Length: 176
Ligand SMILES: Nc1ncnc2c1ncn2[C@@H]1O[C@H](COP(=O)(O)OP(=O)(O)O)[C@@H](O)[C@H]1O
Ligand SMILES: [Mg+2]
Image 1 (cartoon, helix red, strand yellow):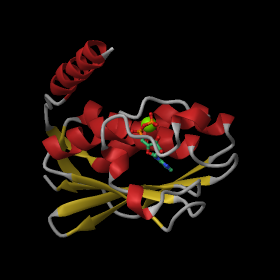
Image 2: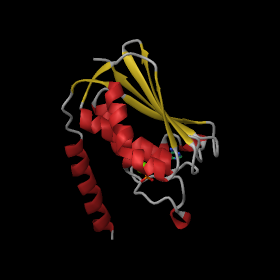
Image 3: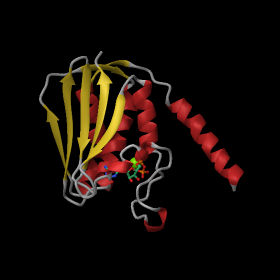
């Protein structure tokens, strides 16, 4: 059992390292967010969620791997969809902050307790105990997202006012 777990962990490490090879190019962050939204639109509408863009600015160029960065936001959006009640609003936003670009995915779902805001980025960590799980998933999405964001000089973290109060995942990326 133990070696099986070790094998799985090694596999994850290898896969993760491969995943972390990023090929940056100049691209508008808005187009990345739009692509990510396009990928989850069907599942969002199946849950009657409303996907809202909070983009007020002209295109902001970042220097990131487009596909991998899209996958980061797809991950955040899928989580927002899964951990929110049917028919709620999910807001995707972007704004400029000096030499950085702040993006966020905000939901009105189950929220995250204060002491778990950091832990959820750890490998295999899921806030819900396995015995009562009804959300599925593997608990590695955020770990990979964090690795990818940090490999590109960015930062990712979660904010929440607590259980039932929704969550906001923020991603800070350097401007090109
Ligand atoms: N939008 C969210 N709202 C509430 N909890 C969340 C949200 N996103 C992630 N979480 C918590 O973080 C855990 C880890 O997320 P993730 O790494 O994507 O794994 P998975 O989605 O496979 O469970 C989730 O199991 C959940 O407990
Ligand atoms: Mg996930």
